[in-house]
Length: 288
Length: 246
Image (cartoon, rainbow over all chains, first blue to last red; front, side, top):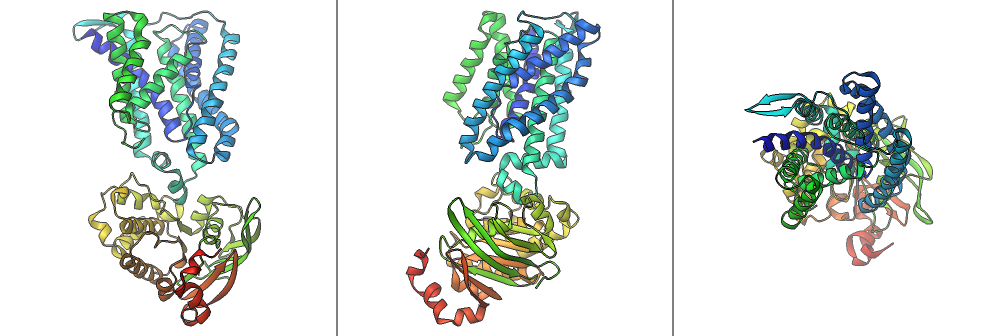
């Protein structure tokens, strides 16, 4: 039971970075290999706010979210839009965007190494236990999960109940048809890319309250996000959430019952199983 | 003639690199008239519609909708201005339902205010869509998808509707049904610019026609006159050779 809840808490926050990548890949058609670095930047912000000002790291969210949004919007318009313009088909755009964002991740890691040094960092905040359903859980994990759930809920409402969300879904389904109904596809793609980056950074701030980070650990999260997005079916928000919870559970199971060092192996094993038996992902359509 | 909301283009030149697709084309469509552009493969028909819709750039020439110039406007602004396109391959949201497709059609500012009326209009023109409103678009037959595409375009409240070879892939029976629907659409007051290879059936419903060959307009007249013209009959209504020209 402890494993179940702990796994769900972890998975709930993984869902954030996965949603970020799902938005960027499903709508803007950019496979953003630097999304893990965005998450780490958010984590650094949480660390800095707590250690420098002794206030709740959640305060960092107030500037992490708009800054990450603006930064990703700029990245899309300066670095990625030229690739979009010259790509003759979707496959070429994917390859180009993978290469470009891969390079960008190195730049970001370098900047963070310069700013924060190469050592591991973590901080202890709200590490007191809270009793739920008969067992003790760390308050910081529970709170992070609650905030992640609120953010996911907000995203769900945005995408399914607003006009902007309608245009986002339309572009995800078919950008050409979206252009024919007077949707400004480039603007929607840029906004969604920015939103995806902001969500990933927020996830990083949340994770920093109970995980240990260093400047180069971003790639691990990018991989996990990729695993979740593929597992859940590309472009499917529900699928990403379910897959994220499954991954959180699987990792916690393995870390508790086997060895904490095997969490990444567990993620890959899950990934391979899904690809072998249901390559379109849990909720994806058959033609990927 | 610059009608209040008529479409007109003059001397439009479109080239893809070295390959000239349109060498100075001038065409007009007034509201309430159905104009057809006939041409074989490679004549430049799609290039003209795509240039008018802002999907490909034009190197020269002017394009106007009423008084509003369309040159250099991005595609979504052109739809806002009142020019809608049903492209080759239909351009519908395959994974969404019929009703979602139609409602998305009314996304623009211009169309939002009239969404309910236009929805009722589209359902009255295409009654088959009513019973299928929740069906996923890509599971429908070609003819039904064509109806969804036209309905979607009408939902954007256009003054002029352009269609790129809508009869492609349809049986002769479905094609005449489609063309009869287009006549009814014209009767609601829209102007229609229809690009086709199917000369006989399209001239039968049109008011006027243009002949496009190798990127140039080589003839234009009332539809009835074109139907009766022996040269047109030879080039477009008789020989299979005409289909391989250009």
